[in-house]
Length: 380
Ligand code: CAA
Image (cartoon, rainbow, N blue to C red; front, side, top):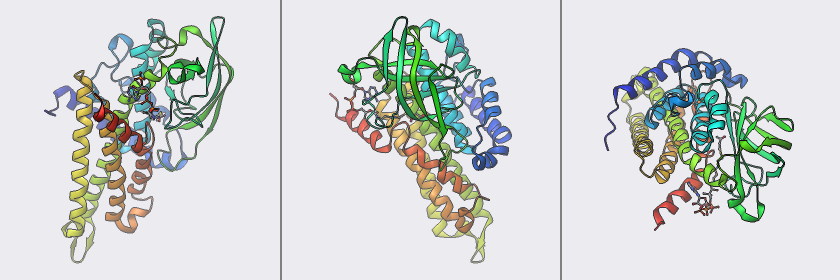
């Protein structure tokens, strides 16, 4: 498979790198401490086309391919994985789903502002009793006149307190199990929406995660995506692409950990030389570089398959599985290379470790990725 980047892909990667270094890096340490949402940064990302990267220009998107999107998320996440996930959810969960299944009306009303960064979106699938077992939705949507009335509870909602709209799954027919799930676009300012408190997380602290209560929320009938009963299919298909975004985020953290380790090992002296001359350190660097390269090949392959219209469910899960492992392993090793300095906030590697762990949990745990991979392997 040829991974030579086109001039356009290189330009997008470089623009994302430049933006990350000049606009994101200066505040990332402070935002990690205070958990402040990067409002201004997200606004600028929207102006530059990074919030609706793969959306067609017809709907105010940047019309780029998935590989460009992966390169951009990777560069942004190398500097700040919190910003990476905010971008990823808006791009590959909310915008993607709306463009693929939304009516012209929904695209005009919501996709255009979401893709151009004028609105922010969140994806609401998980519930207190429906995490990995996502078919067990309890949130209900009951038709009443020209509306649905929604009741229930969602949790682990990335962008939850900041979003303008929710891409939300609810049961329209409980008797049909997952075939009774439907997807709605719900405005945050709808009466009956109760935004819960922001979670106090171990990592990606500047991103925003909360629960969402729905108490008799009236949602217009035209805000359903497609038709009743296809919501689980929409959620799963959307997550296939979302997993490529999270994999790219993980790749960014892994690469940042590796690069910080190389840099530090060339500066730090011990036993009459820089520690980069010690085999104990060299072996760590070799392992880190190998896992970053292996993960990047899988993630780029998943993106290319998607761009070329080839199957990518298994490839996306493999990419996420390996890249998230690379992020956790490399960030832990980066701390070891830095010794005591790796354990304090002055060096960034302790944040990389805290940020990395979630990539093995959200948008499908590593165990769920293995289940998806195995089912795809055994098909047919
Ligand atoms: N792509 C497309 N369709 C899929 C799919 C996939 N990856 N996985 C399952 N489906 C389809 C199946 O084909 C089946 O449809 P048909 O009956 O029409 O064939 C239907 O979904 C049900 O699938 P299963 O019979 O396999 O159901 P299951 O209960 O045994 O397994 C699961 C389903 C794969 C475990 C699924 O529940 C799952 O992926 N769970 C993880 C949920 C998840 O990733 N949550 C992330 C939350 S969102 C988040 O984190 C966002 C954020 O804010 C960062």
